[in-house]
Image (cartoon, rainbow, N blue to C red):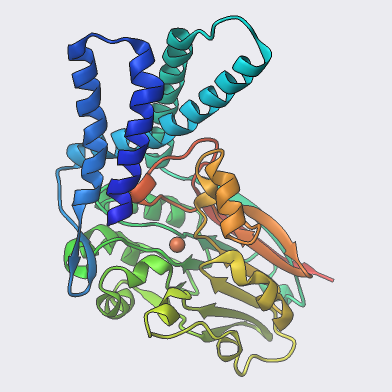
Length: 373
Ligand SMILES: [Fe+2]
């Protein structure tokens, strides 16, 4: 994956100029630091093509963690160096005193290192439980108080491995959900390489079962293999389909569309009309759509609640703003989209490509449904 090599190389060159040179380190210190930064570039070599898409070379957990930490540092340090250099430009314009390059670089380095430690820990730790009550119009009394757990962007891989996924599953089961939704990005890797890491999701327990849709990452690695694998893990995938949950006389519809990446790859495209086919007229609808950016279109279809992920909540300040722009203004939390409720989860885990979260904790979302007039 070119971007994984090119981006850190460009950022490292910038950081050498902005951070390392002003620190005036001795030669051995500079060499050591450059070696540290070069570890970050190795992330790009971990991906390779297979007939089914991309695959990631297997490394021991500690090596994956080290590369992840250094790669995170390169990204975070670049954002902090940029802030420092903007301050330097302003200083040059407004002050006649010499800019304290050494102390500014030392401060920037300390902040970048601390922020990377914090962000990497936050990315790896067990997700919080976020309980959200949500009023649903026309919800039958029988479904009042229904508990729906949502896991999204699990991204099972070398970092979010079997143990991590099992902990997420245990925490979810402890919430005693009636239904579990997984709107995409289950895994990164082929079935052969990653089925063991995702295996704990077959232990998820809920009266109405586990429903899912594809995210973009399902298409990057062995799509056809995973589509056969998900039912074996107890997940019913809704590919432009819906299911009607029944309790007494009341009905609740759960619909799902596949991710738009399917369309780009000549596979099943999302089709909201097909997903809502034969839905009873007055039954409330909850829609799973991996990305939030079709929400304005979906809102025209009498949907009570759309649940999405994909954005990872922006992950870190500055990138938050870019994520918002890339996802039509939707990043994390609640939105009212022309009368339709939209909830965007920041994700239950994180993507190994940038496994870092600052002021953006991951979560298992627990919706408690309430009847609304
Ligand atoms: Fe995604």
